[in-house]
Image (cartoon, rainbow, N blue to C red; front, side, top):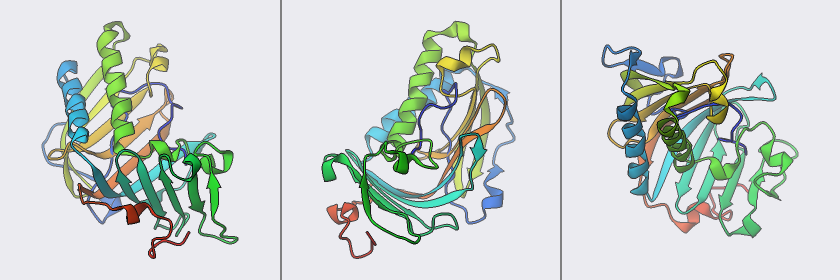
Length: 260
């Protein structure tokens, strides 16, 4: 499953997500009357580094992920996925929305010859073992399953934050969008933009908006655009629960709740 690879050209804020409300149409509601205020770059970078530190304290989490990606020029339908993640790298995904309903994918680093175990949930519904970067696994995805977790996304954001700090000549701009309720979770939202002169090619995306939970520092929504303003990636996280004590059974294909 392809998730957070480099298809767009810039970032520093290429991560935002959705958490906690039942009404998708009201993904974001303002809390503070702050809209697009030009921000001190150092302060925004510190917020990103705080996210890194917060993730270091996380052993596992569950969340509902909303995913929409542009693949091969086409913006695909929005998907709803139940996610289980455990360090160092165990991921279980189950599709629960209208798109790919009942599909399941499981990956645990070092298990199953480092291959994913998956079934697509539709006829003919066969369970297969695939390399994470296999063409079938990547179909309709921008990122591999091994990148489908907070740690990877935060790492990409932090990488671009440090890059912009070391390259002030790039003129990366930061906006503080204030606090919003993002799918039911009080979140801080920021945005990064690179100039339209071509320097964005060294970054993840030309424009990226990130919202994160003000308490846990974990993402609640990520949106990424290319240099022409086309949406490339939109990831949301709802009802995220941290350090819930996931067990080996949660990453076992023989789990009676799974259908591998």
